[in-house]
Image 1 (spheres, rainbow, N blue to C red):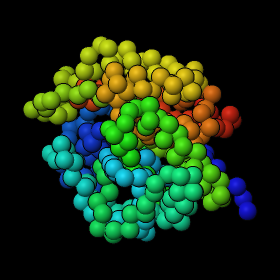
Image 2 (cartoon, one colour):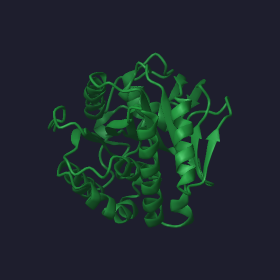
Image 3 (spheres, rainbow, N blue to C red):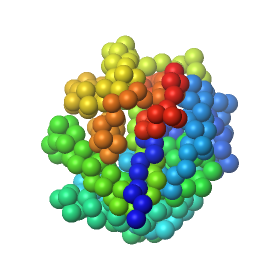
Image 4 (spheres, rainbow, N blue to C red):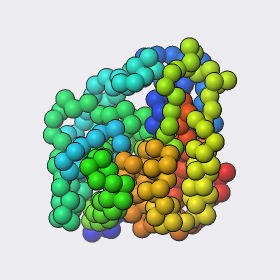
Length: 301
């Protein structure tokens, strides 16, 4: 049997503002644009994905929160309306997505064998979280590839960021083994921002870019520190620094997405491709990817 492989790993932030600013047919609200640095960076990375042969997208999202174990989508398809609980004025998205249930079950099985508490989510009326929808829409707006969504276990809240880091790495190792056994070519997505202190009030016009800036300078300094580590191919150093970075910046890395993806990819020691960094409501967001293929890897920014 052909050995499966991870062909790309993407750090894909999910502020609903980016879908709102794009004005896709699936989203009800309309805008006058905004956050172009991130949206144009996403568009370029989406074009790269079109040049890569792959079978499925696997995404870990911090907005499908499970408190007992890690869960995996387990129905062939999901169709519904996703409304952002904080920004219903920006994000009311009609989705219709397909799931690679075979791969999802394989990941659940291998992770369970590794001692991780797991469960398949078989409820056909389950509402897929907006983190999954936003990141997948921006990277693959045609929705022509099946996905697997992995939940974010909230062990960071029960224990600590250090425990989260360890368990996310174990989950990443298990998912890599499952992908290899599946024989499939897979794109991984860690769906989250970097620093995550954000404004508590919204501008009268959300897309008014004169009101947009990082929450404070220390958040910016931390974001630049970890982006430099990405550029330098020092991902083990970033993962080791993850507890301090997460605590100091309230980073969405607390959901385990980036740690999971880096572990699944064998802790890359080559430079990440950086496609854009910008603030959204004060949070720090970078669009980046890790390409294991030296021939197609490039220096973007």
